[in-house]
Structure formats: C-alpha cells, structure tokens
Image (cartoon, rainbow, N blue to C red; front, side, top):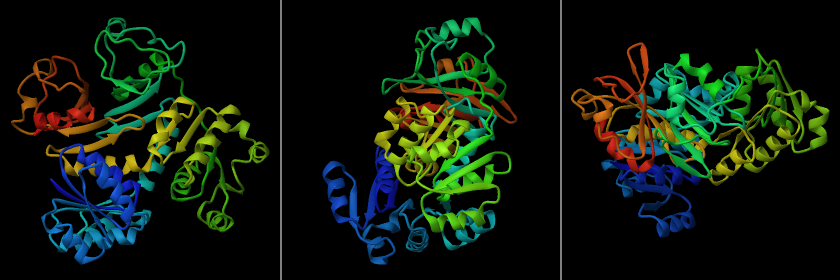
Length: 446
C-alpha cells in the first residue's frame, strides 16, 4: 500500500515506523528538515520537507497515487485541510487527527466525509474513555473490549501469592477445566512470550488474557486480584484528556482536579459542575497532603509532561493510593514506568496507531489494540468466505509463530479458542500477534 503521512514530530514518525514494518511504501511530509535528515539516515522511508497544506508539496509526495493519506500534526486545522486537499488530488482514503471532541459527533463525521475525509481520530477522546473504563474495571492494568464486550483483553500483573504463580498452563487447565478465558501472552523482563502448555507463570509477570464476560471473576481470582471500590479521585492536568474524563465521572465519583494554569482553572470551573478545581502544582507534596491524598482511591496524571505524570503517580502510590494511571508520551518510558509501580500507562501515539493501522490491513479488521510496553498487537479479524482460516480446525491450521488465537464471536455468542474450534465465515476472531507474524495472519483471514 502507498501511504503518505503528514506529521510534525513523534506521532507521525511512530506511525511511519509501525506501518513500515508491514512492508508498506511510506512517504513522510514534515516541516522539520533536521528531523527528516535523521529519519533518512536511520530508515528507508521517503521524506519530504514542507507544509502538508501546500498543493505543490502534496503533489511532490505523489499523493495522487496514495492508497491512504494520514495527517497527524498537532494542529487539527492543518489535518483537515491536508485531508481535503489530498482527496481532491487523488488519494483513495484520508484520515485526519482532530482535537475538538465535538468534531467526532455522528452529524459532524458525515459532514467531514462529504468534504473528503474518510475517518477522524481523536486520541484525547479515546484516552479519556480508556480512563473511565479502567476506573470501572479496577482490578486490571489494561482492558480493551472486542465486539461490544463479548470478548475482552485484560492485562493482569501477577502479584505474590496469586493462585496461578509457579504453575504451568497445563496444570491450571487441569485444575479448572471450564475456564472462560485464555492467556495469550506473558511479558517478563522486557521479553514477550506466547505461552504454551508447559510455560510457567511467575510473580510480577504481566499476563495478557482474552476472556468472555462470564470468565472475568475467575480470571481476577486466579490472578490474585480484587476489585477496588473507587469513589474518591485526584486528576492532575485539566487539559482535554483530564477534563473529558472528569466530565464523564463527576456524577458518580468525588473528583479533585489539579491544574497549574490559573486561566484554565477559570474555564474548568464553568465546564465541570461537580469537580473541585485546585489551582496548584501537584508535584508539591505538602499540597497533596493538604488536599488529603491519603483518602484517594485513584490518582490520574494526564499533564503534557510525562515526567510530572510519572513522579506524581509515584507520590500517590507512596501515600497508599490503590490505582494509578499516567499519561506517558515517551514510549521509551513505558516499560520502566510499569516496573516501578504505576498501574496503567496511556500513550497517545499508541492510541492513534491502534485506530489507524486497521485501515492498512488487507484482511477485514474491525479493531486493533497496540499494546503499551510491548511490541505487539491484538486484532479483531472478520473471517472472509473461502479464507484459509475457515478450512480446518485451529489444531490443523498453520498459525505462524508469534501469533495465537484467543477467541471468537459468532453472532451473539463468544467462545474461547481451543484446538478443535472450527472458525466459520464472518466469525469475528481475536488474535494476539507479534509484528513478525502480522503478514501471515492477514493471509489466513483474507
């Protein structure tokens, strides 16, 4: 696929690297000449320095032959203009990153489609929704639903004393033959393992599990987890992510929000009805104590500064807060942040990639989750009529190394994958895959 990416920094570069690994022809348009020189010296990506709203620059990027144009600069107005111009110049499909939450309403989406923008992605809206979801499913480090929750991906950190610790998958299956979930990956010491029957769970493993709704309670019990009753929350950062999450939660939870900018505090007092706004620096331990941090059940740090978010979450953990969530924009920080005690990491680059990558797949993919802290993805494929995956039971399929089928959704029913499962056309199939296996998995479903 020929893909043109308009960016102005890390988001565009991350997306380009993600897609380049899947053998697409990528052209990056970016105004920063020095940055592009560095990219050219380390990759095979084609780069063009310039403004993506310039018709000459888009023509130079050969946008008329682009199967997909993606505009992810920080200014949403540039993204909208770039996508509209790109479609007029011949791009088959266009995607624009936007920041205004009102732009993603159904009526507005239709208007943008008429202008030539096929899809809109709002990382801040997705991030705030993830926060809300995590505060309702408090025992998990990460949760992602497939087919409206008929199957879900849970990330569970195995604490000392969890019933599955020091047991193999085979032993667990023998002790609990009717489990409604399946472990699809173990992340241990910065390495990702696709687990087989003889693999052993160890303390502090990050275990990725596909589960049916009926299996959630058993999953949490075996993982040594208990649901936390969350009523009192501190949110650090009153930007789009923080205020959108607060707006959705303030009717059911008690929220204190820290915001260092006085003018933004004034705006927040009008925008939020039942949230207490504190104008101050959450890095100030005495201020945290004055605002009774010890009584908090959850602490969410979503400022524009990753270091501030990590530091304040660690302070909250020291004061006994049970659930911590940090927005971490530097991908290199994610692994270490998880290892030093922060429960959940949210990254807008990964959120954007999760939304966009499915538009580049040859097979039909209804949703993708690019996972935090590991180089892997979970995808929901639709099995096409006549595709190879529908020809034989899973046990006889040539599932590539580095991939594992977690479960399927057929109509209103969901099933956890076993060797004798026969996938049928139009089944929605959830697959965990490392990058090296994506191409082969696609072919099975095409």
